[in-house]
Length: 164
Image 1 (cartoon, helix red, strand yellow):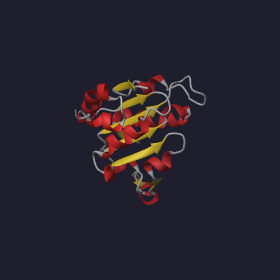
Image 2 (cartoon, one colour):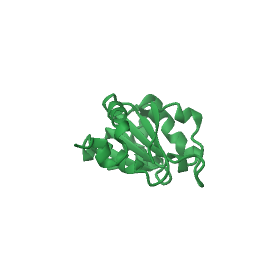
Image 3 (cartoon, one colour):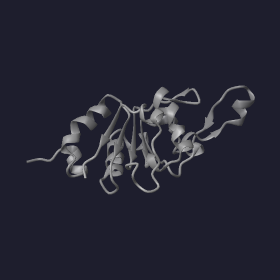
């Protein structure tokens, strides 16, 4: 018997396959939540790479800051009254899939960076082309885990508990 795509990535995830692939096909953002070691990050990376290696970006919510995500403001354009950013290989502006790892380990300020990105599919009012944003999270009961703000949690189409 052949194993499913998702079950080949993480054994025991068979029941999640139609949900995960459906969300990806509908371009919906979602959060995978579960204990450490359950394969959330591996699954998010693998699903994201389905759109191509150039079209996905991985952010560590505990380390990546605004410059990592959007780049540096373009000073010349600001002088003329226009806001734009100087992109680099990790900026969000041309990505199809975004992975935000360990979002519950990020402080409130870091979590707030993602509010507009999730709600409006924009950043500083500038449109973003991404199809799907996948976040990974540990339970709030974990040491060093912060509660995800309700306003951020509401912006995910689905919050999916992963099997242990």
